[in-house]
Image (tube, rainbow, N blue to C red; front, side, top):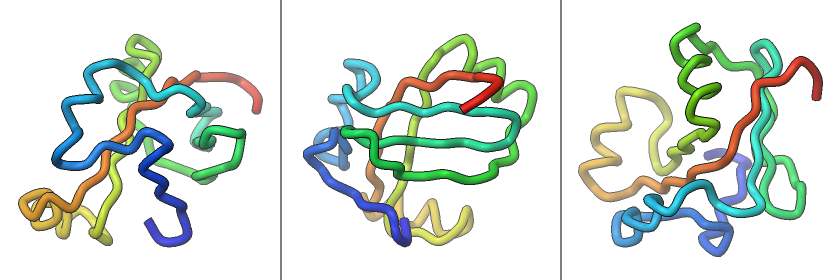
Length: 104
């Protein structure tokens, strides 16, 4: 989460509000994947993430079919820290619409 603004009012859910994710993608958020570049924008169009990702064919199919992306952030630096952060209730979740596209 280094350098990425986390504003709860933008729709992030924590341990106590994760049930709210059942309502679908948060308004104002958007994501687009072109080849291996993922761009995620916050409400107002500000870029929250812009970078290369490694995505399998299966992951791309799911994104294309579901048209939604679940973002998970919190106090962890890598996959090995994730279970500890999850057990401590230190994760934040947000669902955003996503498009697979040929250009940004």
